[in-house]
Length: 320
Image (cartoon, rainbow, N blue to C red; front, side, top):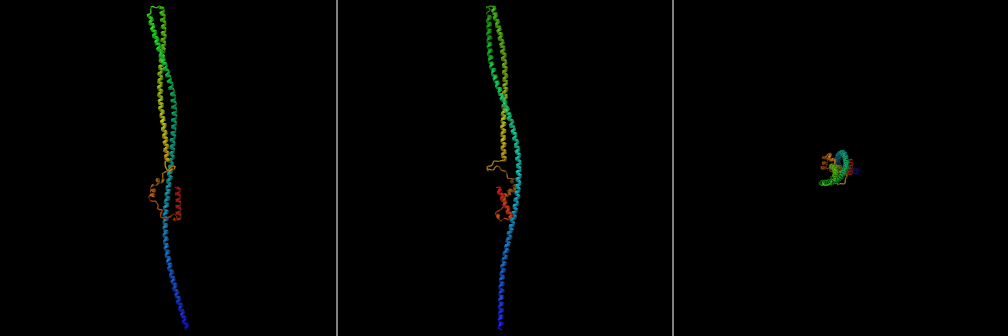
């Protein structure tokens, strides 16, 4: 009986201990389940946050991709506009160069012709001056001969008057012998005839010298008129040469200012921005609404976007 009681007590103790163990196991399972649920909720929260971050990254990637695609398209448009502008400028430069060469050749040929004409006129003027000098010398000699002829005519007139006086006085002296008077009268007549012939010769020479002097004076006046016209023509050619040289210098300055405008920045030359010619509205929009790059860092880009950003920055450095 006692054995039975001990067995029952042992069995009850074993059952109570087993129940206590099961209770502990159930409580531990509940605690584990609650901790796992907390972890699951935390993981779910993290998953949602990661999804939101991924969505943000996707939106950023799409916006950056669109931005860079627009930028690449704009750069292509600018490049095409710049190439068109440079080609048009090159065509204009070549055309202007050909035009300037043509004008330069024409000016050079005209200057050469005017120089030749100037040389010929100078030679002609020199010859006319020599002829004028010879005519002046001839005129001086003619004037001297005229003075000599006038003196000789005066002397002959005086001798003729003296002979006439002698003839009159001899006529009054009829008391002298007729033979002697007739002889002297004949001698006086012959002398008068000789003197008359000499006077006639001197008068003819004087008239001839006077006509020669008048002809020389006319030739002198004609030569002076020719010299004056030649001098005026030479002055006109000199003024035309100066005007052509000034026009040539002006054209060269205009060409230099057209292709190499003066600037104080130290560069050789400047070209206008082709973007302003191609699409001025785009440039104004870019100046008015520049893209905002302050809400992200370049090292947080996706790989392809970061590669494009690095390439764009390197191109910008090269352009600078």
